[in-house]
Length: 194
Ligand code: GLN
Image 1: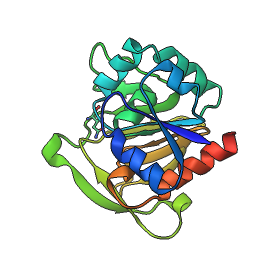
Image 2: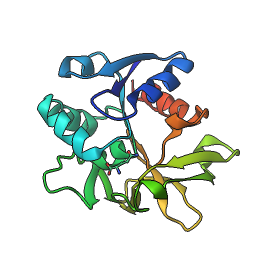
Image 3: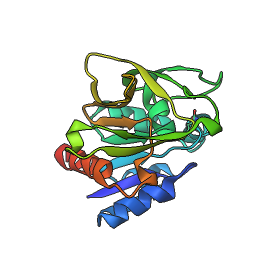
Image 4: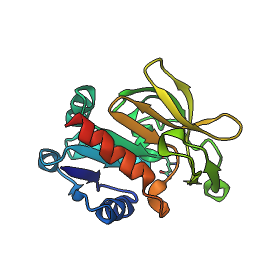
């Protein structure tokens, strides 16, 4: 099994390090041919406007959309979650999206960079221990469709992690912590989809 990390922009190196710590074979995905090698893909945090445009420039947008609709596992963190969503509020006028997950996401929902924060979340699919979630200019998931399972909420009920079959999203950044549980959860999803 090999897992790709989209390496066009954003904090892809941190995701690669998480996967390597777990002993998972990892490919930095920059070109369409890299996608042929991998069994699943992580789209990192960064700037969703830039990631969307670069996916078009490097000819991976349509391929990824088709793959996502056919069961290819994708995990989007923060900007990655935005790019996967069908509906985005606060979208830049020319911002392309993969647009496969039945969610409405509000970009930059907590304000500016200075409004970044951390919170201990209860995430039942990861077990008993709380998960330290790092939010950086994070979005929130405002609406989920009937096929989407909510995995985590903030204490005020705001949805910050969700799954729709092969698609997993978090508004926060597990790759900026030492906690491997979210990455392990994704690797298990990829194993099941193989
Ligand atoms: N604010 C960024 C965006 O809208 C996402 C920030 C992040 O990935 N940490 O694309």
